[in-house]
Amino acid sequence: MILKTPNARLQPLILALCAALLSGCAGMQPPPSEVPAPVVEAAAVAAPAPAPAVVVPAPAAEVAAKPDTALLQDTLNPERKIDLDAPAAHADLWSRMRAGFAMPELDNDGVRRAEAWYGSRPDYVGRMTERGSRYLFHIIEELEKRGMPTELALLPFVESAFVTDAKSSAKAVGMWQFMPATGRDFSLKQNIFRDDRRDVLASTRAALDYLGRLYKQFGDWHLALAAYNWGQGNVAKAIARNERLGLPTDYGSIKMPDETRYYIPKLQAVKNIVLDPARFSLNLPPVANHPYFLSVNIERDIDVELAARLAEMEIDDFKLFNPQMNKPVVLANATAQLLLPYDNAGRFVTNLAAHRGQLASWTAWVVPRTMKPADAAKQVGMSEAQLREINKIPPKMLVKGGSTLLVPRTAKRNQDVSEHLADNASMNLAPDVPPLRRVTHKAGKGESVATVAARYKVSRSQVAQWNKVSSKASFKPGQAVVLFLNPAQAGTPQRLASNTSRTSKSVQKPARTPAKAAPARLASAKPAGQPQLR
Image 1 (tube, rainbow, N blue to C red):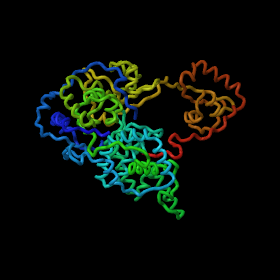
Image 2: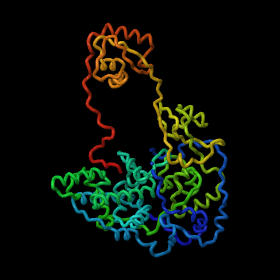
Image 3: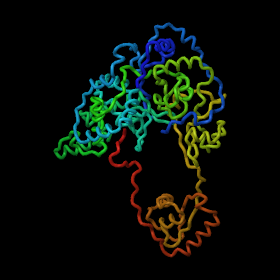
């Protein structure tokens, strides 16, 4: 449900926001020019050692003493006055959305199947629309500014059911379900600290940019939506194929996966429900025609748990509006704005001004050289288990030099994370295995790359590469064959010598070469019908 703030409650909020919120509620800013990992719950990690306090000098009394002419501001329209008592603010947002519907209607068996599916799940539709009510005003505002059909505001119902941290099996993430590469194409930063594909403002901007580009390319909203789901390259190829065959090139005529074929009927079904929910025995929650949330600027790094507490929100509710963080700290140089509901924005500003003590318990540390996690943990003053948990380091892995780790603040390491690290931090790992040993094997009669590889339990391609021969090559008796083995494979030098002498006597004919394995499927191959690059 949309938050409705009665006038009596609005007055103290205005007083609380007059100083900090006016400067904080900036308009939507595009994310940095360029962006992997679930959010770490702050409560799941033991608190680090105390650090010197970061004091916010302005007390709450000073904020409250400002004149009562202060105005609330809209995240998208900072110049616009917000009057929650104005008639337009209490208009039904669903009606505003319906007035902007402009896409061609679709009527087929797929639409009826989707209508039946949604109509038989009223509880699911209720949860989905209640989640969506937080973000619909913002999306419709953006669509109207761009002159785009307001049906597109319903697309997250189909993509993610408006779950801002949704992740598909194909690794598409967020409310608009962007794949990693497409997210980077649209300046959605993805690194160890944040994933802007989950950012409400940034992902909405990117999704509408992408949809606008697709419509410009194909000149048809149904084809543009098919490309959003299946990939613009695939749709272009399907159109070109029909052109070669002299066939129509509209959405209904080109060949596409079943998932994409059903994608647009699902959107049409949601549209039909919004147009006439009673026909499907469904109820839509009322959504008021004003912003649900405000943006509040932050100038210092702050723990997620503390930010939620200052906003007087549960952490899960706080993350509904700020789901992009991958770590239990918000970096001012990465996420300069917090999104908060009206009342909570006012409480956050007041409580932040009154807060005494450090804001962030964590900072970033660049690993100077490749290290074991235990050694890195000792150097930064935390347990190995805590270091592994907060930085998601798997067992039996080394942290390579140049990686960035989140570590506790100390008296010597108490700086906010720099803009460079906030934008470019990465963590690279290497297997924690013993170093390889160079050994020489004296080939016996009839030995080949295949038999040597089988003997030492390495691949034929490795043996061929080490000796600069073909993987089908044979060795001359007595030829020195170079191998690089770990100690478990190599054994001791004496044992190797013994093994080598036995080999030259006992091997009279080549060992049977295993049947050639079928080529492995490319790791990047995707099951048929899955969306590409979103």
